[in-house]
Image (tube, rainbow, N blue to C red):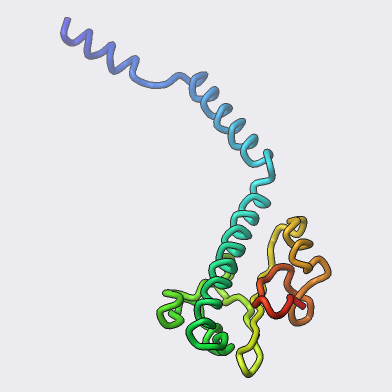
Length: 155
């Protein structure tokens, strides 16, 4: 009797072909619904755009802190290296989340103003129009989002 019970247990311990096909079909259905709903790649781009906006908002605050202490904005060379500290103001200068390049930063020789530009992936984002970059901003009009010091505008 002990052998029969153990034998029956081993005999009934697998999945039937029908059960496997049902599970595979459900996984395929869920995967296709996930990828089709809301366009997966657009959502990933919007996520990186949220990081860009957050990075530039943080940089805008830190630029004003720097100005308040130094009576000027940082020189351009100080903002060209990602993941490097800017004194006690920024532990690591943020990089673009997609290509790890620094955001484009410009200032005048006196450090009296600054502009920081980024290129958002989701080109229909209403914030592009809100900041005035629907026709492009920055050098060569190659950016569509940015922040600037209060005494200048994005160009």
